[in-house]
Image (cartoon, rainbow over all chains, first blue to last red):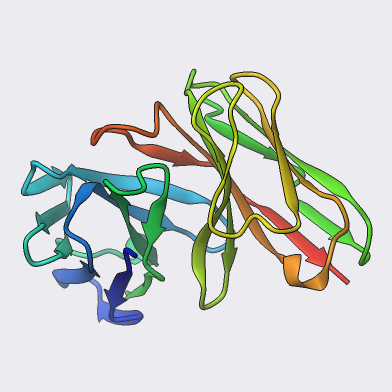
Length: 113
Length: 115
């Protein structure tokens, strides 16, 4: 059974800092891994999707990497801003149960002005 | 662009009442999903529909039923609401359930309280 863990559960940083969010998964047989952002009281917004054959994806100040063999992904946020404050979730689509995304519990990020 | 639209956004039910959450997507996606999100539990799949005309149970289907009305619409019904069904419900859709390149898109959520 696929399990996804995100550490830390919460993170508070000063504005301008570069930061890394971590996601680990137990079964490396995956189709893809997706990073989402969730603002309070809102739905999930997809940030980046990394296919199993890819090592990383970039969008603006965001860079996500994937190391399938070690079961890890990182989301790097450069030059953080207060507007980046949100909960970040990663989700894995496993090959064994492809209809199901298995989510981590998220990292709550606070960027202080 | 509307994307995935859910209604209602907020609802309070009494134990034993029934209700239906509606979801529609305008992206011509084949696959649709219902998730619930609870503190400390993360998001869990209730039901999904891989394509029009098919539905299947997810991780936590007990107490729910679904209908894939057409390609656009996927509804979630609580036949006899229980306090344990107090949660935030999210509808989502993706092009298909297969393949590695499919991004999943979520609605804004429906906050349901059962008293």
